[in-house]
Image (cartoon, rainbow, N blue to C red; front, side, top):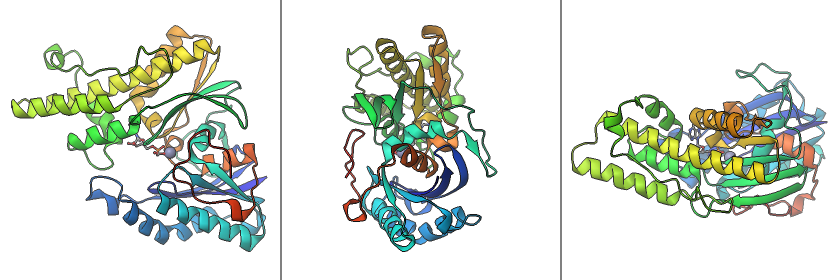
Length: 355
Ligand code: KG4
Ligand code: ZN
C-alpha cells in the first residue's frame, strides 16, 4: 500500500511516499528558516505564508518518480501545531484526496513521531542509514519535541497509554530559549550540542559555579518540567553577565550543564518507567532526540541499568519533523475519515481521539 503524506505542523513543509508503513519511496522537505531568522523564533503568520509558496513544489519533488494516481491513500498531520501551518497541509491534502478520489488518513503529529522507528527500508537514495528492524511491542516511547514531552506505552496500533507529560515547557522549548540567550544562531536548540562540545569537563574551575537543577527527577510520577530549568539557566547567565564572567568558556560550560540536566532527567525517568512496566523496547523520538549527548546518555544508562532492553532512536533526519513518519503512522492506524470531518486542530494531545 502506497501512502503519500503531508506534514506542515510547524516550520517544516514536507511530503513523502512510504510503502506498507516501512519503506521510504520518496522524501522531500523545506524549512521556513529565513522568514523567522530575524525574529528570534517561529512567527506563525510569516511561516504559513512561506509554506503556501513551497507546498506544491515539495509535493512535486516527492512525486517526481511516482505518479500520484498510483498512490492508494493520502495522509496528513491535522495537529497539534500552528493553525496557519496546519491549515495549509490539511486543505492541500483534502484537495488531493478529492481530485484523485482516494481516502485521506488524518494523523496526530505526536503519534507520527513514534512511527519514525518503523521506517526501516528505502527505495530511494538517502543521506542517512535506516535501522534494520522496527521496535518489538510492547514498547515505551519518549516523544521529546519543541512543544511536547510525552511518555507513552505502546502495545499496538491505536493501543496507547499516556504515562506522563511535561507539566509546563517541553525540553525543545528549553533548549531553544537557552540557546537564544547564549547568542547561538536560529533555530538555537540544535546548536546547544555544538557549543557544549567546546567545554572541557575536566576543567573543574569552570564548573564550580555552574549547577542546574534536574526538575522532577525524583518525583514518583512520569511527568516532566523544564520551565524552572530555563529560569535557573537565565539566572546563572545573568549573574555571569553582571559580574563580567560571561566568557566563551563559561557559555560552553553552561550549555554543557544544560544538556546534562535535560539528558539526566529524560533518560532516568524513561528507564524507571521501562523497569516499572517491564518494557524492553525503548523508543526515543521527536526533534530533541537529534541531540547526540541525549542519545549517548540514554544508550549508556540502558546498558548499565536495563541490559536486556534495546533502545530504538531514528536517524537524526527522521527525529525532526518530516512526512515519512506521518505516512508510516497512517499505514499502521489506517483511520480513514470522511473529508468533511478532517479539520486542523492545533491543541491536539497525544491521547486525543480521531475526528
Ligand atoms: O519534533 P520537532 O522537530 O518539532 C516539533 O514537533 O516541535 O522538534 C523541534 C525541537 C526544537 O525545540 C529544536 O530545538 C529541538 O527539537 N532540536 C534539538 C536538536 N535538534 C532539534 N534540540 C537539541 N539538540 C538537537 N540536535
Ligand atoms: Zn515534531
